[in-house]
Length: 243
Image (cartoon, rainbow, N blue to C red; front, side, top):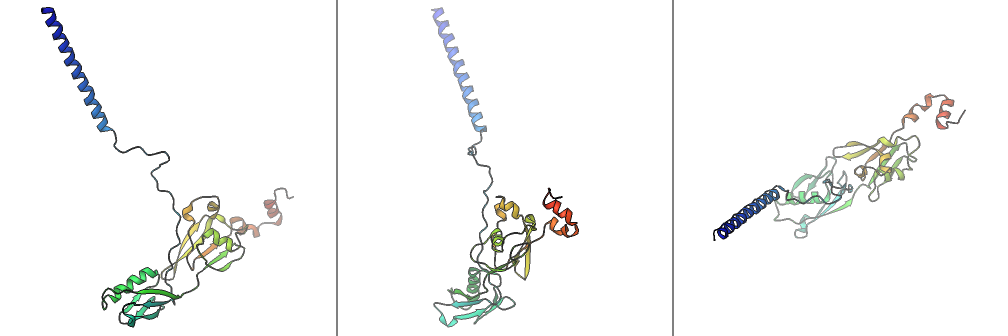
């Protein structure tokens, strides 16, 4: 009897020890699980960076001498045709004047609604661009045919250079100057590395032209100094086998 009691006692102690050990292992596993980040790992190919996006050609911006037809469906007595004046303003019938130079048609429509809201209840206005300067761009410098060209559809800097006859051998491909027209008669200059673009480089530089933009292609270093070199030196530079 004593031996049987001792055997049962030892068995009970063993079971208690096993359960304690199992509980400790489970607790440790839960703590380890809590420390594990809850966010899943990035999938293959994810770098955390946004892919580059092409710049889209913006809407037409109103310019001097543009003519707008304003229609009021519910109050036709306010229908009128206005012209953007040299100071950028248009004069409205019964609502003073507002400045629209450099604004898009949706932006100008919102301005008109705000202006006429002072005398009309929730005015509905339709704006139609009747007359405007034909969109164009200018290319100068080391291109085949410098000049002024019609801007038809979406056109990038590289495409504009091709329209102008392409780059000459004397062109500095890596420092093409791109002047974008901004409000107030100013131009914002940007240097475009056309050589890099042609090699499939940064797509962000492939900006679309806006009406009135100007592209200038400067001469490369050799073309600037070639007239000061002897004829033999020029020939040796162009053809290393020249003697």
